[in-house]
Image (tube, rainbow, N blue to C red; front, side, top):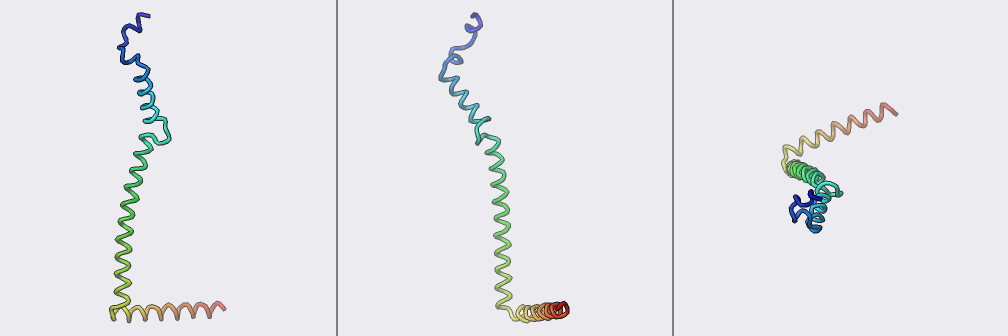
Length: 97
């Protein structure tokens, strides 16, 4: 039992040992351990970046829609575009029937 004499007294304390065991459990063995939290944080950053990208795309699309509805140059192009594809669809539909 000479071995126990060389161990400092705070390492023999049951509260210290329990606290160390709890910290080790929470850091490595728990469902929400440190590595899992880090992975989730990285995923959250990626999702925020993609969210910002899609918000910019939506804003650009809304501006395009506004331009298409108000600008006469776009209105004439839009009507030509619709007429072309309507004729093409009707032609395809008639040919297949």
